[in-house]
Amino acid sequence: MRLKSLPPDAKVYEVFASRPETFVPFTEACEKFMRGPSSLSASERELIGTYVSALNACPYCHDVHNEAVKAYGIDGELAKQLRDDPELKAIDAKLRPLFALVRKTTEAAYKVTDADFDAARAAGWDDEAIKDAVFVACLFNFMNRLVSTFGIEADDAYLAGAGERIKDQGYSASLEQFSNA
Image (cartoon, rainbow, N blue to C red; front, side, top):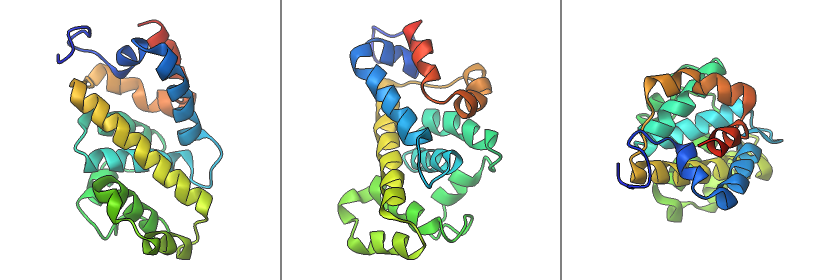
């Protein structure tokens, strides 16, 4: 383990427990980004997060959130298929410009242009939905880097309940986990 203050099998909530004054409001923000009002469904936001995690080669976030994607009834291989297909043929045409923007935000945000936003609008998305997609991408880029830097891994036991927990209880449920850590 990279941090001596964490156990070798540390999970995200143990990192969060070390700074509750920071991570309690952060987790509440995650709940709003991922499950709050949006024209993007919770499952679409989970898929965006899983896709970003696949792009960033972050096994922890990919695997945990892919369990949520599967809990919503979406193919568990979809995020990796999208990662490997820049044309994004495996998703609905309306989603493609959002996912293209998410990819660009993840890989080279400085290359995002008005044309990227115009493409999303042309597909029928309003500015609020576009912001929500970018917020989710940025949230997962942050988390991918945090867990990868600290070497946090998900084991099978943790993954077993992750998808249903996220789907049914959301992100605020993790506050209870790290308050007990």
